[in-house]
Amino acid sequence: MANSPQAKKRARQNERRFAVNKARRSRIRTFLRKVEEAIASGDQAAAAAAVTEAQPELMRGVTKGVFHKNTAARKMSRFAARVKAMGS
Image (cartoon, rainbow, N blue to C red; front, side):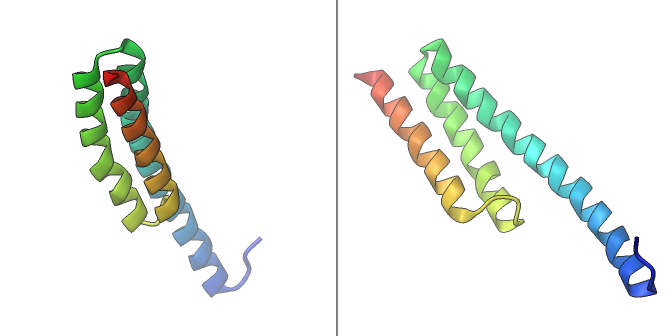
């Protein structure tokens, strides 16, 4: 348990930051789930649109420190490859 005033403040800051990051992570996962559902439906146009919508959200998560840059790049690359493969 935090005893010093500095440690107590840090604990409060961590709680707030955790809540904000949790909300951001949840929002990003929603966009990723929409991409997965669009790919599963078999509609390439809808899947491409979902990927286009998800990309800025994912990159915003990177700038806010929720995801690592390489994680976001890997997810976008794999989604793009899967959407491209639907066409053939």
